[in-house]
Amino acid sequence: SETGAQPKLNEFPRISLGLLPTPMHRLDNISRILGTNVWIKRDDLTGIGLGGNKVRKLEFLLADAKNKGAEVVFTTGGAQSNHAMLTAACAARLGMQTILLLKKRGVTEHRGNLVLDDIYGAQVRLVDTDDYQDIYREMDRLSGELAAQGHKCYPIPVGGSTALGAVGYVHCVEEMAAQLPQGVEMGHIVSATGSGGTTAGLLLGAARCLPGAKATGLGGGFFFCFV
Ligand SMILES: *Cc1c(COP(=O)(O)O)cnc(C)c1O
Image (cartoon, rainbow, N blue to C red):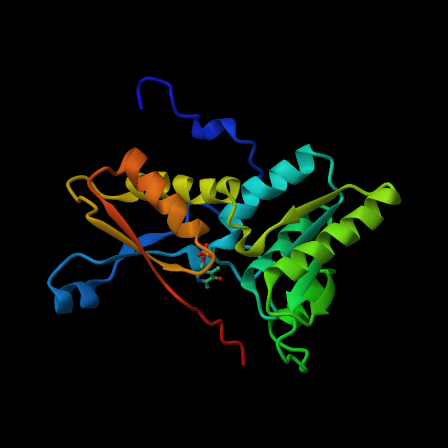
């Protein structure tokens, strides 16, 4: 708003991790078939690890971690969590140690993102529970132990979906608005939803700088296939 009531986006400390802006282009065939203009924002190409949406959140979350003097970053997710893998990649780049407490859920094979977590130097602990509350309790206990040894820890909840993480997607809408050619209006932004931070950021971003656009998250489960 012009009144200055909202915090300014550039007031949140940020560390550049992604190769931004990511491309945005029109899908000509789908647009023809559906009889409307469909564009795609290529956030699979954020340029670190295997890319993906978590990088934008981590630019703010890890800046906050650094500013608070954290050396160890904790996060969680499923065993094949993209968020966990990208946290490990981004934290390694910034010289921070990552500890991943991942839901075990019957996992026996060491493959996919679990291999990448190792390559990025993360310490992985598979926790045999279906309840994130158990994992957050374990995170608290471990950070307490590390704090007693003089190490400052920074916990990131599942998906990096905190208010601060969502700021990454407020920025993404700003980026998309700048990429739209003159005369093209965005009517609808559709994204996949898991932990909800991406959609939250897109909703806020649309309200701020593309007021004509509606944002919708489609979710209830997403899968990352790694063969
Ligand atoms: C995390 C993730 C999502 C969902 O994003 P949220 O911010 O957790 O809702 C969608 N697609 C992929 C590939 C993801 O890794």
